[in-house]
Length: 42
Image 1 (cartoon, one colour):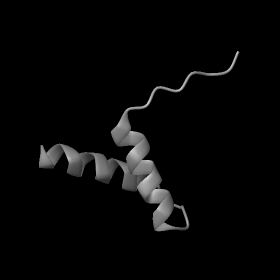
Image 2: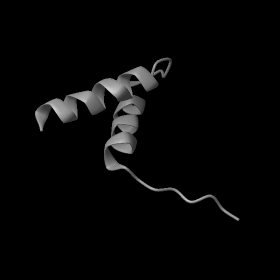
Image 3: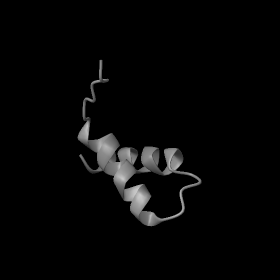
Image 4: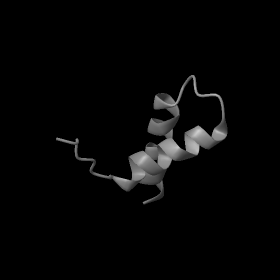
C-alpha cells in the first residue's frame, strides 16, 4: 500500500515540474490520487 502511494507522489512530482509552489504539487497529488473523472462541457 505504501509503495503505491509513493508511486503516485513520484508521478505527481514528475508532472509538476516547473510549478512555482509546493501548493501546486499537493494539488497535483490529489488530482492523480483521487482518480477524478471530469466530463467535458458540451
